[in-house]
Figure 1 (cartoon, one colour):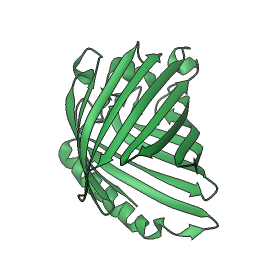
Figure 2 (cartoon, helix red, strand yellow):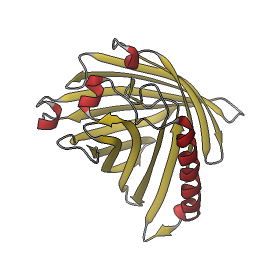
Figure 3 (cartoon, rainbow, N blue to C red):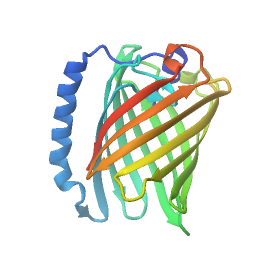
Figure 4 (cartoon, one colour):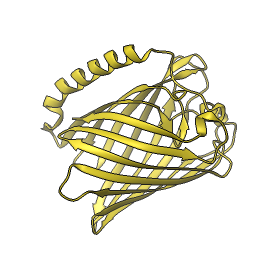
Length: 244
């Protein structure tokens, strides 16, 4: 997730050393671990959940926003049993317009009907410390399962806004996930098309393998796009994440 100008420049992550990242990441795991003790509590139909991760490369829709370097990420969600939810998610990024941090705020509604999971919402991308860089995106998706294969089809739309160059943008994607029988491993795939303010008939795709252990996940993915340049080129991305 990131600002259109960041995507157009194909830029990166804040200049923090990997050693510091690992220390901060460990602190993040500790913080969310403490929070996890309350994450499953139900209060008036409300549920609080959290997630944190360390990634070897922050790729947003195929483009590296971390200069092919590591990034620290995390977020929190507050959901209601009716299906409505609000949340926030953040990541370290390359210095952009005075900001070295991306903070996303979102709200939406998810439901399930006849085995199909639907999701619709609105997301605001912000960059604390910068001016005139935020923008708003609408998103929706539907997913289900065929045999053991999980699938999701989704779209994200940004209408023409001043901070995106007064152009609109559409992003369409297909995600697939397949657990490997009798193992904690799963494989996944992703294919997407983007056109407008952030990409000119841009494609991105990835394939990955993940290992799940309780609330932790370790994954490795191959990522690529049809965008020329180092930050849009192919790469292998590793992620250690936890959810509570």
